[in-house]
Amino acid sequence: MSKKIQIYNTLTRQKEVFKSIVKNHVGMYVCGPTVYGDPHLGHARPGITFDVVFRYLKHSNYTVRYVRNITDAGHLENDSDEGEDKIAKKARLEQLEPMEIVQFYTISYHKAMASLNCLPPSIEPRATGHIIEQIKMVEKILENGFAYTINGSVYLDVNKYNEKYPYGSLSGRNIEDALEGTRALDRQSEKKSSVDFAIWKKANPEHIMRWPSPWGNGFPGWHMECSAMSEKYLGKKFDIHGGGMDLVFPHHEAEIAQGNACNDCNPVNYWMHNNMITVDGKKMGKSLGNFINLEEFFNGSHDKLEKAYTPMTIRFFILQAHYRSTVDFSNEALQAAEKGFTKLMNAMETLGNILASDISTYDVNTLQENCYAAMNDDFNTPILIAHLFDGVRIINSIKDGKESLNASDLEQLKKIFNTFFTEILGFISNKGSSGNDLTNEVMELVLQLRGNAKKSKDFDTADLIRNELDKVGVQIKDGREGSSWELK
Image: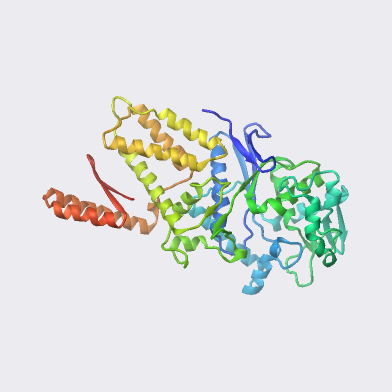
């Protein structure tokens, strides 16, 4: 089994063999949510994506420090340097304190991630808890000559920075093009150049969230929090930085600039970005008003949903596509994911009941090698899932007496499914919910009634039950060890 993991690095635009800065240790920072609304499918994707990365790195015997922040201040509307703080605006509309908004939606986010079986990060720092660190970083950037102050605000001087470091290296944006695109806004801003960005912002009188600083009362720029917190917990240079593709510019580009301007080094070796969830070809997000809350997925209450979907269906839906590919929402795609997950889950249960034979007619080692090869290839979960479906076919063939495994190979096959399906992909049974418990109990009763009909030689009733269930998408399978059911 190859231990070499390849990661697609957004910075170099190619796959690279992963090599940690400190042997057998990984520092990973992932941009978390700005907590001013209910978590939606767009939050689920990075949560699940980097949960799998976290799980696989740990499985690969790395000690991982996974840091995922909570943005609870400084994120202005439209991701700009002007406007109202998103959390403060929500607090004003709801007539609540900003920290009430933060607390409510942080709890909501944690609950959703737990439902999706995402492991909690090692550290989850908040922006408001690291104001001192952010001020110190701003002071260092000023001291190094890459920023300037105007009217109580501090801006990073992108043109000055670009004289020493290539601005736009992550996003591929040319600074001249950026200047041309924003030149019309120059007269409306106090900045020297429209491409400069705030690393500390003066608070207007109506701005609730403010802190004292050497430049007067204000608040940190949105980009500054991640630079300060990643440096505090992972160091000036660390291994992996993750987030959504929409953060490449300006957020992550600004983080690189802040790291270079403060510490004279690019802060990250491997930049990873998951692609977007789309609805009708447009990014799903709160700002666009086309999002569906995760709770609405779980209870089926949104108008766009034909039914409720379990958290594991959502997790499967996300992981059946590669993290760098777009995923377009549709009920058809979710229902296909539901069936796929159910087939794998049923195979896991069947595998637990299979008896060993004297000989093996299937090479289990090849399946294991293929599974590791998929994960080592930039965490290719759809290929991994395809290999697990190969395993499902073998399991069903063994159940039907067409294939066989000896005791050691059978244990190895069980270990493969436990390792990749449960430990790495993070799938768990849906049977923990009351709705699924009821479905299983009802189906067990139906199978018992059908079995009784067959024993009584009432084959017309037995066939009627099977045929009617088939019409609603439930397939009955008769085997030597009795009957079972699964969604088609």
